[in-house]
Length: 341
Image (tube, rainbow, N blue to C red; front, side):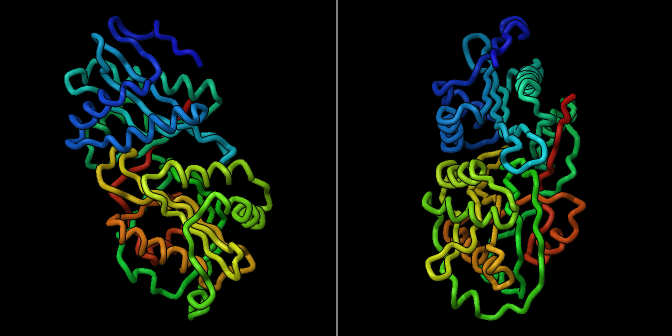
């Protein structure tokens, strides 16, 4: 959608973000966060160049230099959500330019893009300690979303409890604006069956067909484009590849999609985000989920990643209870949503 630059205040030019803006973005972000996150912004700008249909990125020029930037992603209904969603990932305004309306100008451009695409909301998250960002979100009309961000410290041996679960992989992370998650949990006596039978492997592009098959068996829908997009993002849009599959007799019977995150929503520390997990119904309640998550946690610990995040609706009491038993707890981040008329 063409940007109406005439709406910008005098001497402020709103335009699409460009690869050559990278150094300016890093400088602004470092001034705000106290550290450089070059790798994160390099990945985001590169992803936008590769798949422009999924990314919305703007800059405001003032006096010949970048005064502020905004990065967002389109998450449509094709990802298993009931409604399309815009996800605000990063926004920054040069410290000396704050209070001059640049942040609201950038957000207004994002809202116009969202409305043009029939998106009904913009979602984001922020640390409850980030008072400046919280004040900005409040003034911009954001509300606390009906979701709860949970986190779990990475500790070896955390998955020794006797449980497993049968999951609907209709959850795709908010990264995500985590949007939907519909897990069906069940207790069982966990012995050595999964450990003896299952082989856990790093996910590859060749696993798309098997993941699509498992997803179809669980959801009774063919979501091929969604699955391919999910796998591509797991392989190409994560700082480190950590997604896994489980196999029995050389057949994929389960998968977990997770990604390492070094910058979304102002994070400064390496974090893993749990997006999706699915188990072939024929192998449900046999410890496959436990094997997958156990290996995921072990791998993340080896990478010196200290924390995993996921998001659940506040009224999904069954899933909340399951995750609490696993060691998850309320995190330091709050989920926000801005409904769009």
